[in-house]
Image (cartoon, rainbow, N blue to C red):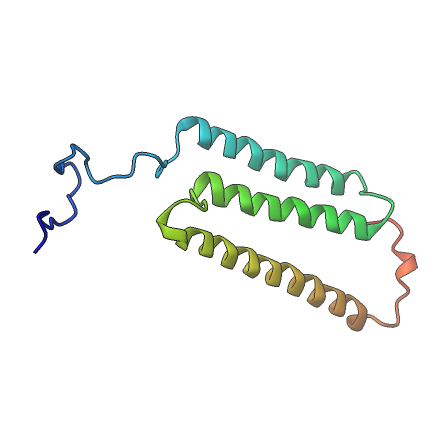
Length: 139
């Protein structure tokens, strides 16, 4: 037997022999007012900028406009994950990082699948119409 006795993890509010309450005080489990405010401001910016780009007619190339909106969308998902869901690489023994990677993969699949479906619908639903006639729509 060892000289140290094995004690169960302390419960919320109880202290162990070192005066610790059983919580890792080096990480922020529940963000501060400042971090929520920062996340909110970033989310608003990441919503308003692509909206303004699209409403003003976008860039000369529709592909560049679409890619810009997609980049803003992915950035906004990451902002929500970090500032509101408190996901980072340090907490929960890497499970949070694994969740973040999974979320990014799901978002990429959803965005690319949505673009693929919309492109195919646009191409196959009205093949007799010429797309040049829609000058004011998205170009």
